[in-house]
Length: 103
Image (cartoon, rainbow, N blue to C red; front, side):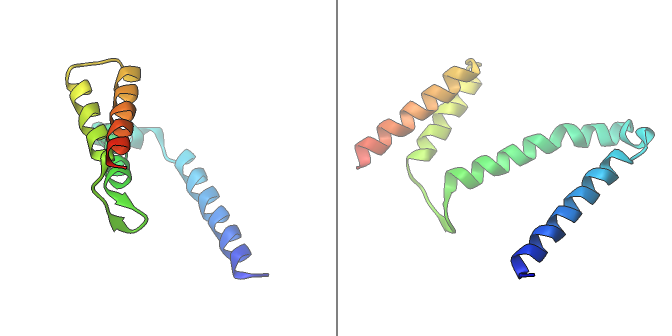
């Protein structure tokens, strides 16, 4: 068995164990107010980190390019409470225009 298969099987076992242990947690632990507040903030932190990594990096280098314009336009649209499709489309169009102007 190669190292690839050992890593694949090992990762699968760990993923199964984590999922199983998540279902085994008592309900009273999950209903604690502090845990509820933390659970509300986890998706925000993960999405913020994903946006930062996808906006400011390419492979393993820090990049500043047209994606920053798209992020800025999306933030402005969100501040003005634009609908989600408007936020996404305006961000994509502005990034594409700046990309086209720089090329």
